[in-house]
Image (tube, rainbow, N blue to C red; front, side):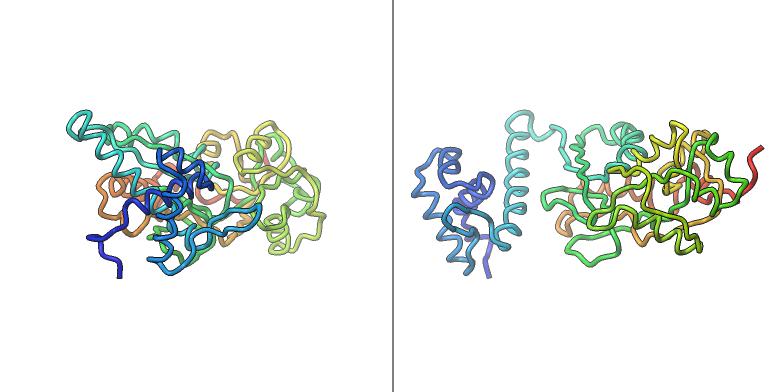
Length: 318
C-alpha cells in the first residue's frame, strides 16, 4: 500500500501537467523543467502503480482508464493545496472558498440559480463556480458538488435523491382551449415539443406516454429541443404542448403562464440526485452547500413546489 509519508509528489505533479496538456513537451514548459525529467517522473509513477497511465501510440497520446481515474483526483488535490497556501499568504487564510458545482441546465436555470443569492447571503465566504453540461447521469470527477439527472445507479459518489421526475403535458393557456376534446384528440392535433435524452430516441418520452394512455396518434412530429426549459419557452409563445416536470416549472404554473390541462402523468424513471465525493463529506464548505441544497430540493419539496406538483384534472377551459 502507498503511504502518505512517501507520496511521490514530484511524480504526481509531472503526471498532472502531462494529463492536463496531453503532451510531455507542454508539461515540461508549464513546469519549467526538461522533458526528460517529466518523462522520468511519469515512468516512475507508472512503475510504482504497476500500470500505464498513458497510451503511447504513433500519432495518438491519451490517458488510460487508470490515468483518467487518477487525473481529476490529483488535479483537485493540487487545486485545494494551491488555494489554501495562497489564502494563507494573502490574508492568513480568510479568503473565500471556491466550490465547483455542476447542475443540469434546466434545473439550474429554473430552480437553482434564482435562489442562489440566498446561499450567498448565508455563506458569503463560499464562491460558487457553476457549470451546466448537457449530459445525463454523469458528474465530472473534478466537481465538488453535482446535481445529476439520471436513472438510479451505483457509483463511487454519495448520493441524495432530490426527487423522481413525473412528467405531464403542459402548454400555454390559449393552447389549452382545445383540451375539452379530451387527451387523445388534444395531443393528436397539437404540435409536440420534445426534449432530448442522451442516448435515447428523441421521441421516447412522448412515445411512452402515448402507449401508457392507449393513444395511437403519430408521435414522431413537432420540434426537438436540447433542454426542457427550451421546450417550455416555445410553449410559452402559445404554440405546442411539452411533456414537462411540474416541479421544474412550478413558477410558470403558479403564475398561469403554463397550464397542465390533464392529469396524465408519466414516471420517466429519471430523477435528480445530489452527489459528492465520499472524502469531501467532512469539508465544511461542501457540507454547508450540500445541506442547503437538500433542505430546498429534497424529497419533501418546498411549499411553493408542492402547490403545483400535481397537475389539475382535465376540464373544459372557461
